Length: 304
Image (cartoon, rainbow, N blue to C red; front, side, top):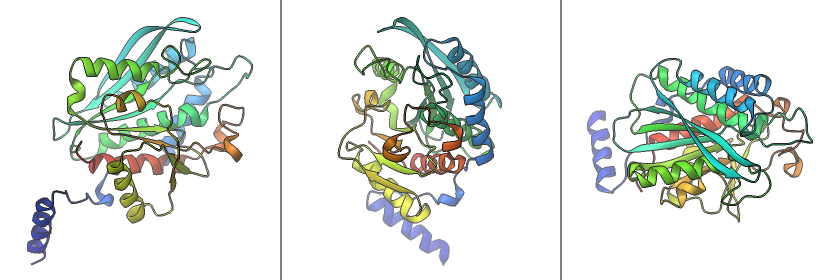
């Protein structure tokens, strides 16, 4: 009887043009202790990790090796060179791919470069940079242990060059995401991209996601359903303005993209790009919450 009722509910859902929501408790879950380790290693082992620096070259190799540890993911480093206000710089995007049950794929991204500060020695960039890296690496590790294939193939992308040197324009900032969005649009790979989920500044101890105004309604409504049912303490709001972040180049290519970002870091955002962006001011539990939210968005990603 119960089985018949479940079957009837499934058929009714399909007839109505919607898919039943995947139970949250069955999804992969990340490990807060591992997240904390990844964030601490990022900050302590790789100081001064701005684009073009020797430190970020070492950091890129560490990310590549960490993502590839189990051998379950296809991990690639994609170098390219571009002109910047500081001259030509070599950037490196890092991708980690795992096949799913569908040819469609979901892009999960974060930037790993830190803001370049010549006048702020010891700048940690714990939230604006390291938190997203820690989240993606923990998600990769959770998937390695998960017994089932994800519903869609997944591409985790660690973007280089998100931070601008002076002011965002076509030659300053978003280098990694602009490059990949253009390359994948040119070779046709974006045709099968179902959605993009970006994680940026997700470590604030006082977590409150600030979603850009142009967040697609399909993804916003899905996030609302997930948080109401499964993450009722997670606060979020929709901004009255858009955010210039690594999701934008993919939006411009027609990919539904959501930027999971807390752009209210410290009183009046006072920790952002300052000496206040430290390990002491971030929380592994905040990062874990957003990473697990991202898994729920992936498993229930609406069609384009």
